[in-house]
Image (cartoon, rainbow over all chains, first blue to last red; front, side, top):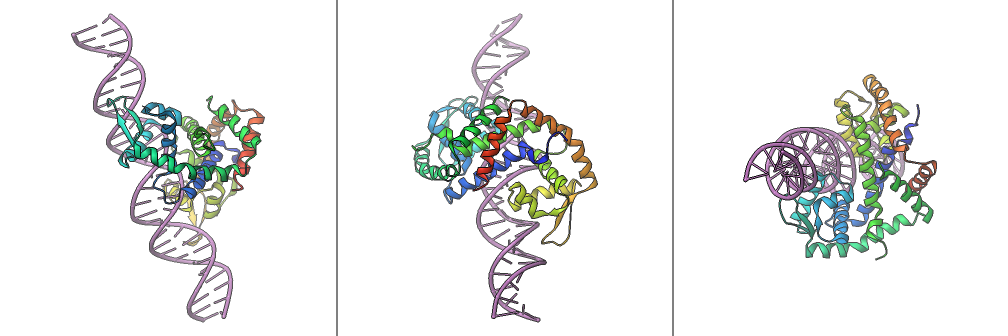
Length: 136
Length: 136
DNA sequence: ATGTTTGTATTGTATATACAACTAAAATGA
DNA sequence: TCATTTTAGTTGTATATACAATACAAACAT
């Protein structure tokens, strides 16, 4: 065999993702937001109101997946949608804004926990890896 | 803010995982196995028949998640379960063995595609990152 | 102007994931 | 030995994910 099964990058990155998500979830505790929802809201916090499609590309999310994530966030009153059916814009509601801001310290605590074991060099290494993969 | 929202490791690793999974899926095409199922079967291919729990730990999978993944694989006749209810052992069936073997070239092609953009240094960097995270 | 192509969103269907609650068996202790 | 604790698996419930099919509107072409 050309590669060893433990080298499987799919398996490894998937496992890493589960592990890191678990850490975020631990910090989020009972907060009524999941780590994915947090990512979407943080993206919107940064970009402001934008076309739905742009968030999908930014987060590398399949359009149908984003669509369904948004249904939940809209139902919770954290995000709203405006414009035409076909090319809607999405943005945080006031409540969404507030929610993100109250979540930031929690998010930072999760980041702190992870960063605690990482050197600058490790982060650089990951960033390199990430940017290479994004070429695919 | 202490960190920039684009630095969010949860979001980044999750996105990376989606991206890499997409590549595997593209190579798998209509093959009647998903990338997760492939990972579980590859692990069993390596370990032989073992306690279910060991696979969960190996792949960092929640026990209930593995339990449900196994239901599908057992129904497909690729894996079987033996021993007591509480501490069963799982292993590839003959059909499962064959399936894994026929999948290896496909898996290698996916690995090749990803490795094509990665230098030895990139892989080392990722490995470092991975091993640090596993300390958490 | 109207018919076609293209880009975007949603729905149908299936898998993956985790936490909490429950069940069952093993291990431990008195 | 028998009661208690610990460990492992499954089920209930909810979110996340993607592909295929469908729906719709904008852009384009003739």
